[in-house]
Length: 302
Image (tube, rainbow, N blue to C red; front, side, top):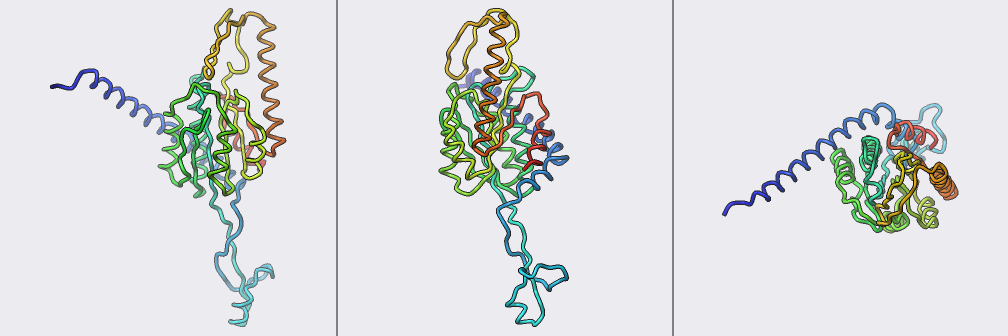
């Protein structure tokens, strides 16, 4: 009995999807590696100096060496001064947390939020890989859906990019506090944590404060321009991709548009204040913005 034509079609479509994803991952790698090598990698290294100092070697004393570095045992044995050479412990762990609730699978400027997140994550990942740091990934919405343990290397970063692009984005309310709680339970050592979300849903700010005490945390709000301001297009049915709720709105009303835009601004101000109070950092990034400049400035401040 022959193979049904529908099965042939499904196989062919699946193959084409895989080819498209591989192509997209390659394109992201090319774009982000240029940006990373040009500006971000050096700033990343300067900003995140590692966990401390570790012993490297012993060598003869030279003029200007600190007295406290003298190795007294070896000095006594050879009857001439020797000093301990210390090196920075460079290896760090970077954790990338990505909100995969349905509102992140959206975009009006030629790029979905998920694609923009994948590109920024790639820049961060290649910066870390260039410094021999490990990178891990947590995909979450109403719960944690996938965890990729921290590893090193280019292939691992490409796998992270692919997972962000191909994840099934969930029609559910995102629970940032749950993702933080999970990460805190699994990763005990201090890490660099980059949290990507559109922050459309509420969260327990207490967990934010707890996480930022242990880890170096940067929240990155990814938004489309239509998230903040809705144009005049008459009466429209607005659909919440996460809760399924629908409401009719008269976008021709200047007052309605103003009220909506002000509510969004207030939400961002509250987020900025919440992260600042928690001793964490926060970036508000439009999908059309040059994220490399924003990251460069963030690294410089650190």
